[in-house]
Image 1 (spheres, one colour):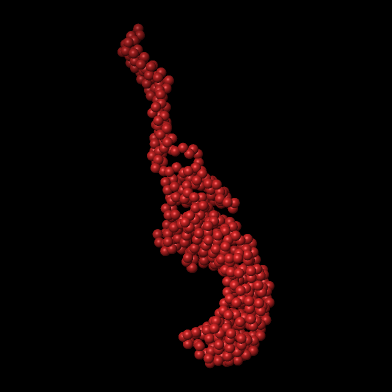
Image 2: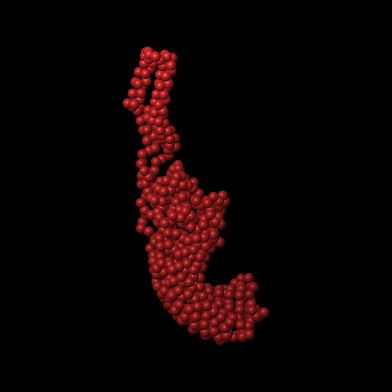
Length: 522
């Protein structure tokens, strides 16, 4: 989209209707008599004199002659009257219509040339619709969008041209209004769970598409002091039944910083114009039905902090831009169809605290660079084609709090560096091909570790019961489906139901490990 289109001007003559009407009235009242009317008056006068003075022709009865003369004169008068009516009637009709137009239009402001002013008093006409489409909307959306009367663009243009009764004299504000209106119709706004057009009850605020209420006052919309849209945040975590694609008109929201709509039915990919926005900080569209390959330069010029599109159907490689936006702090791409290698460039993002790549189709090994000092939550599970081992480079992740690497093809043992992480609260390595023993160094995590899940691997050896006793804040300990042996101590069992740091889940392979309190050993 190459910038803003030029503003449309009002069609035709810009002269005030009231002024032109007054001019026409003045012309009618002051018009001089025509030569034909003057001639008719003279002729009639002469005939009247003749009728009074001329003697009856010889051989003709005077009474008959007088009657014949009267008939002739009456016929001439009828012809003259018809001529006058033919001349005067159009002028009177035009004068009446102009007076009515003058009365109606005199109370209305005349739109300034070159500015698509949406005035409360501008009558809803097809001319106004044509003006808006030809002068503005068609240059944004393309003319094809208006060949279909049911298209979101056509419906939005009708609403703006024929219904809106609040002032929007700024082109940027007009663009925002048009973008939101198209979005409403493209996501089947009339079927939204709440705050559709005409809804009398809208718990989130004011219903959308209220022609008398500025769009900045609609539910879930926030504007800045210049009347520009900055936030579109659908706050209901259960969704609002938004059903349909995002359209290119969203690129008109050039001041947009936050766009949030989770648990809906939004389809399609991000339009190119949306990816060109430059102020987006939060893009949260989790749990929708979006698909396709995200452009490599998507939002490359925006200071994105949170990018969440988990639980959609996106595919292809992770966009390059998402490995280069230095402000990025949370990137959640879980449960899509992203593929290829995990970019090692993530390690350069010094603000990246959460990276969730769960449930995709990534291949290769986990790059060492991903274990950066900034990473706090690292979720790589449900990628069966990931291979390799957990590198000792994980010791660099000093702020790592939660590590989930589940259901992958990784193998090898747990590196000792994990046991030295000062903030580790969750370690979930279930359903991999890991081997070796659980080190007694796990006790180093006693003050922080709440979840330890090692089930479904190839671990062996004796469980270090004394070290497990030191995991005094743990809520979940799962060791089953391995080859561990040994005993769960009475001290650990005493934490079950103690009402303090209660151990909620505890499982082992009951035939190999003695446990009097494990969930699966009753």
